[in-house]
Amino acid sequence: MADRTSSAFDEMHADGVIRTPYVEMARYLDATGQAALEQKRREAEVLFRRIGVTFAVYTEGGDPERLIPFDVIPRILSHEEWMHLCRGLEQRVRALNAFLTDVYGPQEIIKANRIPRELVLENEGYLPQMQGFTPPGGVWTVISGIDLVRTGPDAFYVLEDNCRTPSGVSYMLENREAMFRLFPEICARHRIAPVSHYPEELLETLKSLAPASCAGEPCVVVLTPGPYNSAYYEHSFLADEMGVELVEGADLFVKDLVVYMRTTAGPKRVDVIYRRIDDDFIDPEAFRPDSVVGVPGLMAAYRAGNVALANAPGTGIADDKAVYPYVPEMIRFYLKEEPILSNVPTFMCERPADQDYVLANLDKLVVKLARGSGGYGMLVGPHATEEQRADFAARIKARPGDYIAQPTLALSTVPTLGEDGIGPRHVDLRPFILFGKTVRMVPGGLTRVALRPGSLVVNSSQGGGTKDTWVLLEDPPEAPPLALPPPEEPAAPQSQDGQSQTPGGMTQSQNGQSQSQGNN
Image (cartoon, rainbow, N blue to C red; front, side, top):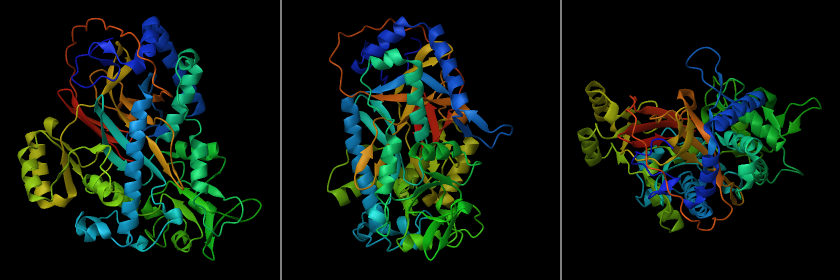
């Protein structure tokens, strides 16, 4: 395998041997030529094209519908590793939900001076319309996507909490289906935890939130802004997999504080809405009056307790980047526990000492808009020009509360098929957590990977792709270590701009170090 010179933690190799979860996979890769793997990759592309697994890009002109590149070598996590992540993810989601319940209620964490009042109440993600309201079941974050990065054998960090409308789960499911079709033999050699039951788990979670006034089987729908949305494939996929209707705003109406769906058989009452529309657009009577994709009167029906929304409006305050540094304190405050998963160290530019440090180290840090997404409004210090750093210094001084900064991290790598053979590529991971009457997680999540050699671009619109993520049902017995061949001479370095986006955000790099910024 080519290029093992990176200082990043290699999830397949450690100390000159193959790590236990990858032993069987290493044997398979050694026995399978690159030509055979390339053929499988071409078959995967044909499969995805036939199924129609696409995403949309509207900023570059031409046909916006594209296939997301799929790497045929799976990422493998041991049972022990996944159980550790499960405990940390459940703890974090419970704390975030408790935070939302509190800040829209008694605001005890603010009164205790554990988080600045203005950071919450003056935040654009905070919706005063939700003050004093309790969502059905008391659950705000029904579906969460928590972005994780890894820097060592036991070192996992939460990069970002996605509590509004996290996307990507359809690609997780389609990736697994493709692996079973293309690699039945190697899949059979591993005891892989299934993920295909996610739609059933999602539907059961949504049904559990049906209001008390629901009579009989709850009617669940998926509310989409329409086919021009970049995640429309996922909206239609999940509706189809759950066996529920995919609706647009015009398909619903509110009468006497009850939501109905227009059908050929007449109006049908709707009990639960899995909405994939941002807060500002879900109801023109409550938010933006110019919204043409929302449902007039929806918020009034919601507040009357006649319909459940997942996720609840106002959850954006929980995944604000300026609020993110306080999540460990939320865990301590609400759960009386120590955090299982760590945050990436974060400098708050509104704090004078932090601002001084950031301004003095702009060439070493990544600066982000506290409420930005998609990598916009970001400075990658190590790769920025003096002019760009000076511009950001002025921005920070003018509006320090708008910015945070973080150090780079050496993200882990996994084996990936490239034109030059199999080599390590940087990855992150987005597990999906369902929260209803109980917390549910399917094992794994969406692994996003940089495909080009020497690149840290993991965004699908910029050459990145996805992998299937295998969680082993049980840890395999310790096998005799497989020695690695001597590393090849490193190739000449390739020029990179150091910036990259994930399906949820950005990744930056400096001398083998990188940092991924996710978002919905």
